Each structure stands twice: as structure tokens, then as C-alpha cells.
Image (cartoon, rainbow, N blue to C red; front, side, top):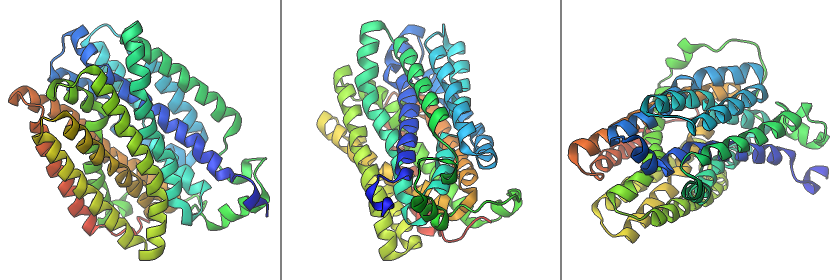
Length: 417
């Protein structure tokens, strides 16, 4: 009876993770929202700005797996505290750089610090949520990415206009420190370690979750001999290639490529991520429902193939159009289907990895962030060589179609152990 009368404690944990990811995306999109101002301040070309964006993605990729391994070994709480303190420091230092080289160094160190947020959130879902709510749990923290990116233009652009492009980075750093205080005082790794949780909910979670505590090491040789692991990470490479356009390059694309005003860019970016937040919320419930109806293997495949295919079509239409309304609507529609892709991928890590979900998510996100790194570099380079901001979009559409083909092959019922 207590389980039905009180707000489930695991959902409170989901809300904490939601704000964690919200702040990460608020931080990482700030550089893009003030990108035109930063380029003007330091006289950067599109290629150089691509290196700035790529520095974060490269560091994020390199340190994703070590951070995930530590989370699975030590528990996510310690790793969360390290992650957020580190990134808050280097978010603030981004506002203090004095040129191209220092900007690249600070953004690299920022990416190093932020690495592991998603894998450790995935590991937390494995420990705190029953199997039947896997997609719902992943959706709770995934909503934070689009929410953070949605409110970022409304916070960052006005502050940058009023106080200069450096000021938003200092504000973001303070938000991170506030999250650290809450995590340190309240969050614990397991339901049994939380004093306020009801006995009924604790037993419900521990009897139905995928997490099984053991002391055996992670076998890299066994994991990488599994064909489905390679299909999953290749598909997520395609997910993050597209995602990094929206998170890192889209504000510049709209202003310099499609000739949006700064105000038009701000509102388009904000609404795009608002709709993505709604999509993430709906995707969690829809995925769990579809799995009950069709089984986990078919449900995951359908979501992956359909969402990738629609994204590819929308990106192509936006690239061919010069109408601001059509461009905005197509990009919003494309990113609406990005959230199901992300949730599908991280929920698959829970299903394929079990108690190694965090580590598997780290491996997957390493390859995903490699795609983000390459996209950030190639986008700027292709623009400088072709003189067109639309040229890289055709490549992105091809990557998205490749992702759809990969999901036809993926079978999440085949684990990595």
C-alpha cells in the first residue's frame, strides 16, 4: 500500500539525474550559442571553431570508458561528484580564455571532466529501476539533455547580450556546484542505502532490477567478440554524429548558413529542444508499452529504424529549403526523433549489459563521441572548402540512413557477458 500512496523514490532519483543531464547540456551548448561572438572575438575560421568543438568531443570520448568503469566498480555517487566538480571548474575557465589555443585546451579539459555522465546515469537506472521501467528510467534523465538545451538560449543569449559572451560560463559553473551539494547530501548508490525509501519499494526494485552484484572482472575479450556490440556502437556513432550538429553547429548553421537573426536562432533552438523534451517523455512510456506488445527485440528495431529514417528525410528537406519556417520545422521534426534514438540506445545497454550497463554505455558512448568529434571537424572543414553550410547536411543524411540499416540487424536480447 505504501508503494502506491507515496511518490516512488526511484522517480526522485530519476529527477536528480534529469537535472544532472540538464546542466551538462546547458554547459555544452553555451559555446555554440555564443559561437558567432567567440569567432569574432578571436577571429576564428569555421575550421578553427570546429577544432574548438571537437576538442570537447575528443576528450569526452577518450575518458568515457574509464569513468564508466569506475562507476560500475565504486558506485555512481563518487563518480558523479568528481564529474560535476571538474566540469564546473572548466566551464568557468572557458569564460577566462584569451585566445584560440587556450580555448582548445580548456574545452578539452572540460570534456575530460564531463565524460561519464550518461554511462553512470545508465548504471544508476540499472540499480534503481525494475526491468519493466528501463526505457522510462532512461527517458527521465534523457529529458534533461533537451530541457537543458531548450532553456540554454533563453538564459545564455540574454546574459551574453547584456554582459558579454564570457558571463554565461560563470553562471553555469555555479549551477553545477549547487547540484553537487544536493548529490552529496542526499543521493546513494542503492535503494537499501536510502533511509527514507519504503521497504515495499526497496524490495520491489531489488527483486526486479537487472543489476546483480558480483566481483568478477569485465572481460573485454568476451565483450568485443559479440557481433551485436559492434552493431550497437556503430549505430550510436550515427546517433551522435547527428546529435552534435544540433548541439554544437546548429546555431551557427542557422545564422550564417540560413541567415536567421540572433533572435530567430534563439527561438528556433529553444523550441526545437522543447519538442525534444516532450519526445523523450513520450518515448519512455511508448517504448515500454511497445516492448510489452511486440517483445524487446522487435520493439527496439522498429524504434531505431523509423526514427533514423524520418530524421534523414527531414535533414534533406531543411538543407534544400531557404524558407526560414520550413527549415525550422524540419529541424524540429528531425530532432523530435533524435530522443527515441538516444533512449533506445541506452536502454539497450541495460538490456544487453545487465549489471555492466554503465560500462557498456561508456563503450557505446566512446564510439558515439568519436562520431561527434569527426562531425564537428568535418562540418567546419566542408563549409570552408565548399562555401556552403548545406553541404555537410547531405553527409549527415547518409549517416542517418546507415544508422537505420544497422538497427535492422541489432538484436538486444544477445548480451555481452
